[in-house]
Length: 151
Image (tube, rainbow, N blue to C red; front, top):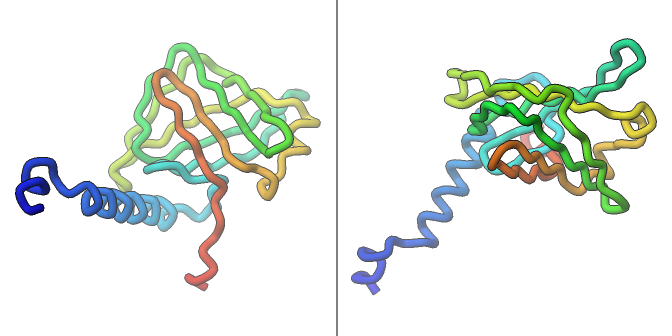
């Protein structure tokens, strides 16, 4: 058994280390923010809020973590609440991740166009997952649940 693990590595050990590294990285992001995130993906956290400007509604998102992207063709955000999926297109086609040295990662702001009714119907408790598609990246975020053990 020792020969195989030397040749091919120990997958179980490596997977557990990767999971621990991801958990520690996500904890670092959460500890540097006063706001509560909407959802978490592998090495990325998404924060969101609504804004209205001149009668138009926007879902403003901030993706904090390892995602580094320079987009020229926009992004799509799919919000699945079980009953249906809301498909949002980014407001701007061009955006770029900015370096955030504090967490050894990046922050990417993307605004999405949204109808007022859709904005009012989205509730965090109903969201099953959120998928961000930008360039070759597809990130699937799962809803964030505050850790009650820390209190």
